[in-house]
Length: 180
Image 1: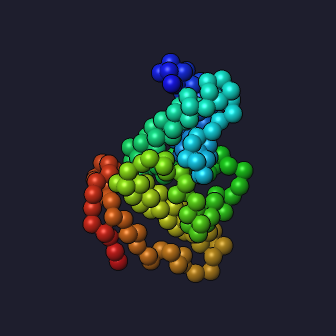
Image 2: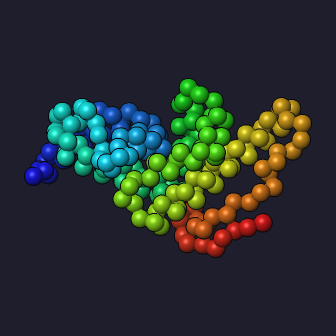
Image 3: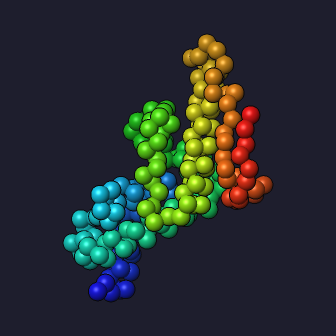
């Protein structure tokens, strides 16, 4: 039986020694999602498991992933964009390569905790895909203005089709599909 104190100690250890050192919410989301075994759905972390046991480690990581995912969803689109900019700036790879990989391979689906509801999943995907499109369009415009492109950016004419929208304050709300 898992003791609440073991789980709490594991969660505290996880925050103190690892998560607090990751500067962005998105970075924490990437890290935590990488610890979920896709075959078993269990979270695995060698150090936490050695110190607190597999069940306490799984529970602490699962809760941290869910909490971090919720934290990301509570950010406004502007805050998500800024956080993602900070995350991409911390990588040792050109952000354009990462953006194109996300656009083509949709690897960001793995960032969603396995036990999340459909509404949260849909909101995350809608927000993230919209932000990636904005970032790609921004990069294309910058390239065009710097003379690296000969014509206007082709993506500038297509629309995002969210099924969830945000209100004037940037908070999530159900909405109509936007086209055109």
